[in-house]
Amino acid sequence: DPLHPDTMYLATGDCNGYETNGFFWGGSYSAGVLKSTDGGSTWNSTGLTYALTQNDIIQRLLIHPKNTEVLLAATRNGIRRTTDGGATWNTVLGGHIYDLEFNTGNDSVIYAGSDSTLYRSTDAGITWAPLAAGLCDGGRMSIAVTEANPLVVYALCENEDFFRSADGGLSFTTKYSP
Image (tube, rainbow, N blue to C red; front, side, top):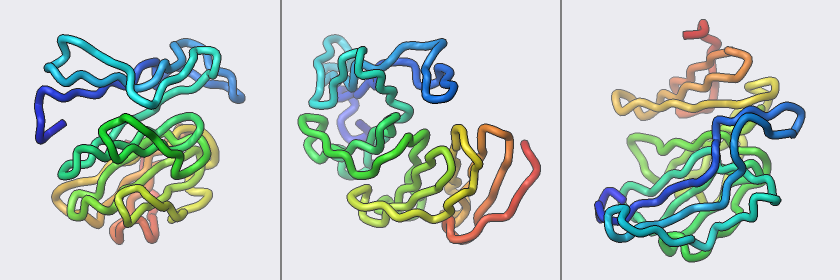
């Protein structure tokens, strides 16, 4: 938590484990999100908990830079959002979401990458709209943004396709794989 350094959140499991045709191997499923309010000395479960038999994965955990009660979790079963520091979570977008990034010039804008579509929220993650459907043709999508220009968004696909947007994700050009 950038405003309260003793408060920390931890997404459990192995988000970088391997998945083939919907089957996860080479890692551990998630037990949910843990929270510490004493700098990591003790940890407690939040309202986002899983039994390992639920086979869920938390791919990315993101905390709002100014309203730190708001967190988003990119999971195998959608984006989960909390507005009360993790006590309760709601699903705000379905699908397998791999990555989340805040726009560096406007913390109400968030990008989410699935296996084929880049999504954008303009209300801090409450609602989502597809920006670039079919950008990646399956597999993991990683997103990058830059403080140098808040309109620049990068998308790197599992198949090594690499895209750049100069207009906040409205259009993309193909770049060479880095």
